[in-house]
Image (tube, rainbow, N blue to C red; front, side, top):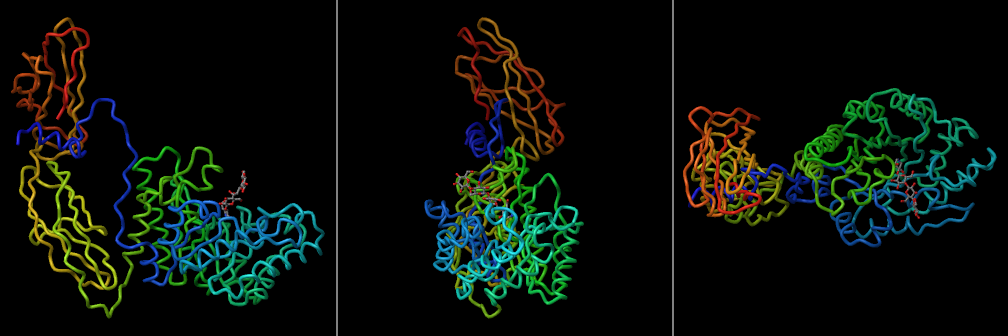
Length: 549
Ligand code: G3I
């Protein structure tokens, strides 16, 4: 195969990115499909992986419903169980949204976390203007009716009894509840909730309490005090509305100190926002946040699970609240999985202990098919294996050397040697460590490279032009060190190049290949070099630009 066509294929697949000077920066591609849904891995470890759900997309969007049902084993109503939704007028209850959430969870074998009984926000004005006696009575009635409605339903497992009762400095929030009823409203709310639903786990929930700080320490002290007074506080929720620009809190250490009080802990509302627009670097940072939160929960035995505050960027509260920020969730607005989905998946799957009694091997994977072959990489895809429990991953081998591991039936190989034949096979594994028979092998040959090391780009510009002639320049930039390079410029056949510098030229009839001169073959990581030439053509006006490969 001529070098031109081989290298053009590499360009199309993006490994040897030969770009025009004005490149379009695309959003990162969605990561590959995971082998099992999040809930499968979470269930294997006795944790929940949850999402907040909004009633409108739940009623109207199939993709929303399908992902919510498939990926999560726990649900929190984003708004439907709040006071303004359930009792907007005194003692007039409306459970339409709340019941919709409950019915969905019942249909899909999911547990529900009730959110929230007593909060200063999304509570109607009529409550806020009550006298102290009336307000306490309204609170008791509300808790009794709302928590009581689902008390006999085994799907409803827990309630946020009080939400966001602290100021940032750790003092109790100066809310209308506190102003009218004093600190005692908190203990009362828990006692009323216990009376309404004795089996539910009763939680206190807040934001900016993920790390050890003044607010979380105040919460710690309150939980310890309430429990010492036999107030039924079972659980502490760490909302975890994080942002990549503010750093990652020491959440494991903080959750552990609460767990050591004997309470259940949980991540209740995680999202990880970023300043828009998205980039692959920001996505990657976000993914580490998600991964670290899941790992923290896995590491704390009293952590019952992690709930993500929604799952698609299409329906997130973040852009409405934080101007210029967004992309905080694990699916994009088109329901494509993001790097953060893979991070959550892999963190859950990595700790999946598997079934110790499982001795059955996964079935043999299909023969891998190679595509997107470049000088340094290739994509392999094969028919997935099946397993009596589940396939948790695949390993790609060249002989006995493992080239890649993946959780999907596709792998991207990188760092391969140019112009080299690779005979590869795939082995599937399950969580219990059983491995399949090796797949049939497939052989592919990497393309000719620009030198040792790859990842060079070439950018062309016309420096100058005149009637019938022009001066062109090509800048070669390499992400990795190389000791030689080569690029081909294909003009219309009427173009003749008669002179060049800082390069060695071959070719004719419009197609010319340039390799390095003796002195400029070596380019360091991130370095570049430039060569030039004089061309002539029989046209007029703007000189033609070449296809670069
Ligand atoms: O339903 C109305 C709609 O009819 C109207 O046209 C529209 C106009 O703004 O508003 C809609 O209501 C909005 C509601 O979300 C439903 O989308 C409210 O304005 C809006 O304020 C409300 O925001 C919710 C917010 O709590 C209110 O405080 C967010 O969806 C919800 O995600 C957010 O959730 C909170 C948790 O409960 C507690 N922790 C923090 C978390 C994020 O703020």
